Length: 478
Ligand SMILES: NC(=O)C1=CN([C@@H]2O[C@H](COP(=O)(O)OP(=O)(O)OC[C@H]3O[C@@H](n4cnc5c(N)ncnc54)[C@H](OP(=O)(O)O)[C@@H]3O)[C@@H](O)[C@H]2O)C=CC1
Ligand SMILES: O=C(O)CCC(=O)C(=O)O
Image (tube, rainbow, N blue to C red):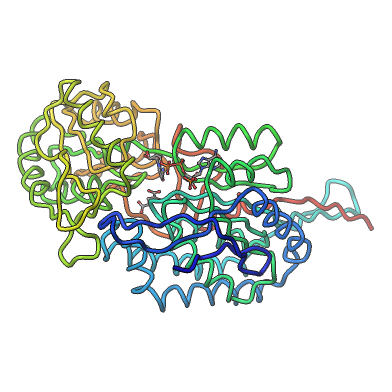
């Protein structure tokens, strides 16, 4: 089997060190062997990005538009093939995987347009005869470190704005899912970018990722992943004064009020808590339901959860794919045990499951009789496990929703305009949803959270310019 190589300074590197990319739906299926970069390759990638930055930061906006638009077009044209690859390596079911690929293509198209819309200001100085110009320029070299749960969309929403605003990139994807990252990099490599502007270094976080964090030549780091690694990124970058942006966990609440359309509330909970196997930082892991509809909601949700079809991500009809790997599966089952020990009632699921092929399967778990103080309601599980918490009214529901160290996404199901307005105002989350699942977002508007979920300026939409540009104020005398 030939090795999919790293891309450094406009060339595919040659390296024998490789990691096997394993299909979580069928661990006998090896998706491919992907190069495993070391510190030397990280160093070469960073050097190439520094050199390329000298001219790319001054590149024309039409050139940037054309390149990003070309990348977006190829991703969209190959959505079915890339969707299959994503489903095969990450375990997301095929329709979701294809949807993610489409989203990645749309993101490149969006930022192609944004490259044309970089704005500045021209002001009078308070000193007579002096003019002031405020412009936005490239930051320089951006280190991009991404997780496994959105193997093409998250890289896209970091790489596209980085390039659109004239930065060069060193990209380190999660080792678990190098296939989509490599395919995206192959498309970028053929898009007409000058050598060194974009570099791919597949390798471990501890070696390659840490080398990027510690390297003074990397001006800014954009990271999505766990809270623990986010802390490492923050400490390393602040030590050397580099700009950084973190997207981390969530413990996202979905509130169901007594006046909610219960069928829709159940559909929102089912989608938010279990789709994508619960492996979304926007997943609804805490379902806060008011007493008058508590029993009705639980009964309806339980019957839906029990009937979810768990299986091979590529098979027709599968609704919930496998967990991404053994480590994550062990973590999920450990939390199911913790929930039981804490006194929560496991209404259904939470068991290992065998399918025709060896894979990381479990039944989606639903806990009731839980309190917000329980560990299962405080820590991000990142699997198909959700808890129901009973509340008396909207005030207690919002107070429970806010009682968490996280603040990424939050939802409410209600038919009351005033309840929805109150929730939107008082909920301490970066994204608030009314009669919609907490997960599943648009590609052209800001994405990010409050409190422990995020740090730095927002990702996506035109707000991304804040992170990927730096502001310069010029004073011009007569
Ligand atoms: N909020 C989110 O979107 C996500 C949250 N998670 C949460 O994190 C848990 C663990 O998942 P995991 O994938 O291990 O998350 P990590 O935070 O460890 O991984 C995210 C990325 O950071 C890299 N990395 C790891 N250590 C370092 C380091 N010291 N310096 C620089 N980069 C580093 C990883 O590399 P490598 O390829 O070696 O892993 C990966 O590319 C999950 O169970 C879940 O709770 C996970 C994924 C996404
Ligand atoms: O909900 C979504 O679509 C985005 C989720 C996400 O970005 C994440 O889980 O990291």
